[in-house]
Length: 315
Image 1 (cartoon, one colour):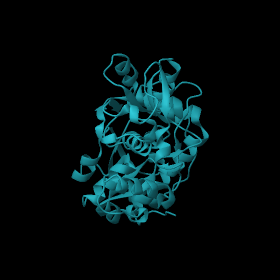
Image 2 (cartoon, helix red, strand yellow; image 1 turned 90 degrees about the vertical axis):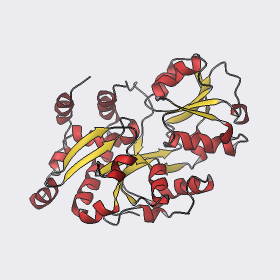
Image 3 (tube, one colour; image 1 turned 90 degrees about the horizontal axis):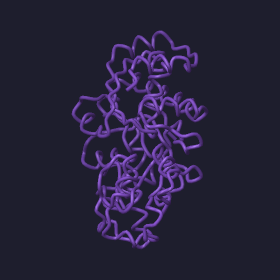
Image 4 (tube, one colour; image 1 turned 180 degrees about the vertical axis):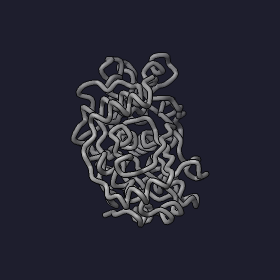
């Protein structure tokens, strides 16, 4: 395992110069920012910003913790900010938990598919209905991979309620299918390309298209109370994530190297990579909220603008 210091040293060579007003630095440095994030491509800017030195440049006192489930930590106060799927932020608000999104992360665009529902090459499954009653692997039951697979199955003649959903890390899905423990898997990059190049699987469907041709997969979330108490910190943090998103979109080779270091999952040359939104947009988030309502994951209709913190600009 590569040490945190080694990562910071490696990332320092990639740092772009940035002048941060001294007053802003003074205001933000005094506020501790424990941040929870997932070690995957979707959340990349949250840890690329550390490796590039952007947090320190902005005077942000950030401590990163890597975890796949951040909702409880944010709700309980152990985290100040958390990277999480848009779906989970919507579910939390539906349950009365006052989460607000302050910065976007990964953005799905149909012209850059980085996710698929896959089966073994010799599997008999050709349609959504063929999967009824089968076992499908997904990273967890709160991520977009799970909700997109369910949406695709239901929209194409299958019954997602009949599926046995099994939580498993993406890189382990192929072996689980070969061993007969899974019939299919909903896999994202950077695990998808190595799985496809192994020659054992085929794509059944690019299931994210069942949600919309473009939507926000994940974002950085905090509580309404924290955003109101520390608007300068929130705006500074959002600016850092936007700056990191621009860098990652323009430097996929370098970001791939950092992703490999942080996740210990190789990113093969030519692999499809996540794209990152650089601004919160209603049009990117509303399709996800509409899906959640249509599939009874939330009980009350939500507007994307209500999910965004008033401390940060959105369109």
